[in-house]
Length: 318
Image 1: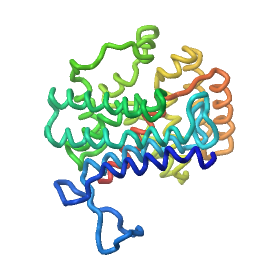
Image 2: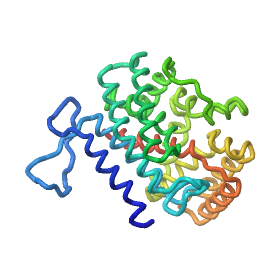
Image 3: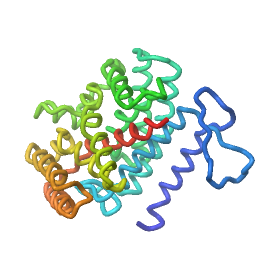
């Protein structure tokens, strides 16, 4: 990556910061900056809960993008099965979503409960966030699924900052079950895959309370940590646990049932070999990566859910 690749990332970092109002201590405000260098050490920055949740969500998206080696996905090594994406573009896209994620948290706080008006407002904010993402990426869909998943989770966490991941995911599912009458009728790749193969996509995952995350991703993340794996390996194992069970509509769209079978069997093989931290596991991971690249298959659905997993893991310590 050269210096020109970094300019969009640096520019959008400053744009994201410019949206923050640190003038006063509001409800749920969180002091930050302890132990960090500051221009004026006598002052301590104050951010709201909504800003903090937006920070965590964007951090989860960037952590997911940086995680390497991810089979078939953009990471620090390559663009995976994508010819139109780079790691710098993924960073820029994530940072462009900060304002909309903050606004979703603020909307949840303002409504104070799960209601039709809240669902409608979240839908509107999400569509505006998608347009901001597309403007940043030149029309490339980098994070549409992540806007849906993380937007719901940010709103659900904002309704109760101290709630545990299971309760947050369940609350997000209740929001997702409410119809948004203003949602445009469109044939997304996920909806077309659902019609063709009957596979559940991002919408169903959310409406069910993110079972791929709660039943597979988070437990594997914590299991791998407890067994001494590095944080990077624990996150890779969490991603593989999601891949092993998810009917990833991104893979089905690109490679059909054969691609999905290859993904799920390959992810299970890595975990059965002891996970990404073991020699046998790394061999299986390289094999899976090669197979997905040959099929031109990118498990973007699993990547979005890993970001949701990382968000819930971080937000659970609020």
